[in-house]
Amino acid sequence: MTLTADEFLAELRIRGATRLTRVTFRRNRSTVWSLTQRGRVLNVHAAYGDASPELLDAFAELAREGGPRSVAARRAASLIGAWPALTPALREARAARGGRLGSACCATLEQVGYLRALYRYFNLTRFEGRLPEDIPVRLSSKMRSSLGYMLPGDDPDRGRVVVEIALNVDLMLEGNGAERIDTLLHEMAHAADYLLTGHRGHGRSWRDWARRVGCRPGRAGGERRR
Ligand SMILES: [Zn+2]
Image (cartoon, rainbow, N blue to C red; front, side):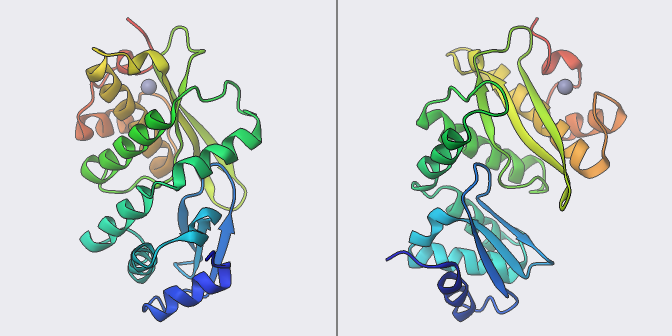
C-alpha cells in the first residue's frame, strides 16, 4: 500500500518523531530526503510512499535526531539511501527533466548506485557527514580536458547549494580506480568549501579540506587531465 504524505507523517509520529509537523513528497531528480524548518518538515522523495516498516523506523530515527547526528541516525540514513527502489525513481525524474543541465548522465544503473554509495561513504567517513545526502553524482562522456567538476548554485530559499558533481566517464575504466577516488574527493572538497565557506577555486580553505580528506591538494587532482 502506498502512503500519502499525511499518512507517512502519522507513521513517523507514532514512532516518536513528534517534532515533525509536515511531510512533503518530492518528485525531482535530487531529493532523497531533507529536513527543513529546524527539523519540523521532512521533504522526501515520493517513492518512499512505498517504504517498509523498517524504512519508516529509519526515517523516524532521523527525524527524532534532526539529521544524521548520531551513530543510529547515520545508520538510518544509509539504510534509507541504499533502498533499491530509489535509484530507478531518481533516474526517471532525471530523464523527465530532459538533461537541462547539459550533457545527460551516461551512467548505468549499477554505476549510479556505486557512485551514490561511494559519495555517502566518504561523506560519513571523511567529511563528518557535513555534506548533503543528496548531491547527485553523475558521469559525463563530454569532458575533454577535465576529470570532474562541482556545479555550485544559489537557491532563493536554501541559499548556497551544490547542483551536482560530475565525473569524467573514463574514470570508471578499470585501472583508473585511484584517480576516480581522488577526483571524487577533490570535487567533494569543492562542495564542502562552497557550502560551508562560500569559496570556489583552489584557495587555502579548499586546500585545508583536501588535506583533511586525503586527496592530492593540487588543481591537477581534479580539473586537469595530465
Ligand atoms: Zn578543483
